[in-house]
Amino acid sequence: MVQRFTSDGLPSRSFQPSSGLTIYVVLFVASKILKAVGLFIAYDLLKLIPIIVFLFLLKAGTSLFLIILQKPFSSGPRLTKHQWFRIWRHAIFGTGISFLWMFGLTQCGPLRTVLLFEHSDVVVVAGASALFSSNGSGGPSKARGAVFFIVAVISLLVFDHDEKLVHLGDHDSSVTAENIHHTIFTHFFKHGVDFLGWSDHKGGVVLLFLALCLHSGYTSVSKKLSVEVGGAKRLHSLSSLVSSGILWPWAIFIFLTTENMIESWIFVIFPLLLVIFFVGLFDFYIESLAASHLQPLRAAFIAPLAIFSAAIFLSVTWTHPYVTKLTTMHKLNDIVTEDHVLSGGVIFSAFAFLLATRMLMTRGRAAKGSFIGYNPAGLPLYSISSEALQKTSQSILSVLKSGLRQILEDVDSRKLFYFLTINLCFTFVELLYGVWTNSLGLISDGFHMLFDCSALVMGLYASIMVRWKATRIFSFGFDRVEVLSGFINGLFLVVIAIFVFAEALARLFEPPEVKTERLLTVSVVGLLVNLIGILAFQSSLSHGHSHGGSHSHGGGHGHSHG
Image (cartoon, rainbow, N blue to C red; front, side, top):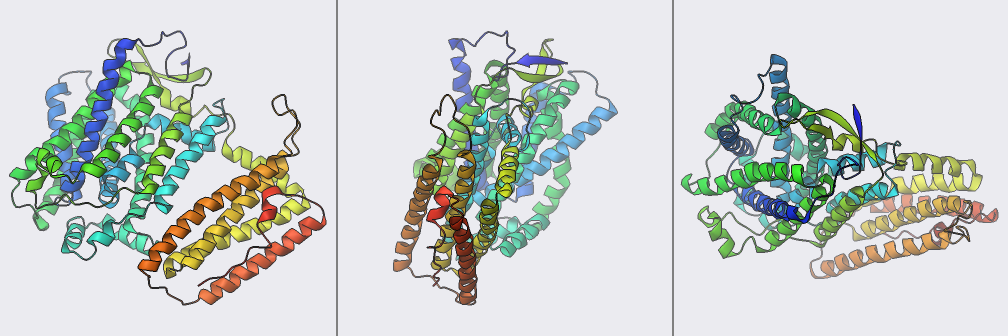
């Protein structure tokens, strides 16, 4: 059964919400602020408590209050064996995602965890559909939103310099913290990031992004199960209880075999209760209340705006003595330290995430909502996130395939595309080797080559756009697109030049050790890549084929590494 819906998740005949719903917005914002506080407390508690033990305490405490409030065993329809099996499966997957979430919290800190994980499943599914689906009529705004979302994640990997390991690397506290979190998963994680040459922070960013994708799919699938078992609150109560039952044997084993860093558990009770209430209970109940009164797409934007703002504010003020006394964290061996500090990359990522959410939540025409059942009041329920899978105009992959086909049809464009492929491959080699050897020359030249590749991409696509016919809006055609692509690439180069200049100034005062092995080999390979580019450009110029911004970056690009 399918019903026509507007993009805000309401039936097309529904009335708009009145101003009396302001109280729900205030409660919703307050719950997100409290959740940010709870995550900051959880991060500090995880310096003393192993992840599995902490997760068990969180699940057990949450399920205890939920069972008292919801009475899931006495209310609702009788559950069949098949439904119990699905609840167990739901709990197992939820426990795994929660473990990834908590482990990512220990690696990235609360601020970056909030930025990466606190997104509505509607936003994530809409972004995924904009990238990989070619059905529906979502509009180009969703495709741009998906790109901005990916850019926000990449900025945390590239431009966010987390200083936690630098500050704590010479202290015994970091070693002790690693020991209490040592599991099989931790062992593989450490070996994986060491093999890639990454810091633990960057591995945590990738892990949290993976957890976000899994959680979004998990939440979307859970909606139909919640209807079948008697509501989302009943499902959450039973699933939390089963999760705590799954975790308790492992938690007991780790508690008995791991060195206890807590002098008195009395000091842990109050902060732990705050985490249970703020993260496990208040957020769930108020989010359920907001979901039934606020427009889903409006709530999907308010939530990250509120929790991002709160997390950024707390990251600056969390170590203040007044705050530590207010949360009683000052009694726990001075575990509140200034690590995972705020950076320019984090600020840029936060704005990019908000902009992406705004774009992905733009209003469209009528959309389809899949009927999943009835609520206890007898009203029909529709899955809004599942319809997002059907709502995009033309996916980015479809646009890329069409553009690639046109590029390969032309001889000169095809040669430039082959050079682009070679140049891009060597760019990543140069960047990775530059990070490995700590050579600023290789790193800066790698970024230069990266933006050369972006110039080639824009130039090649501009060569396609100039063939487009004039439209009512662009009555003079698209001939000036090539000039615009060169201008945009110049802006990119200015931005990266600022970052390289700042890094060079820092190295003047604290010169790092540069490993000089095989630098000459990489430089010679870079020279060969440039020679290939010169030949490709000479061939293109001899045929009079203009590729806009790509002409300004090629033959004049020299590689000098030191």
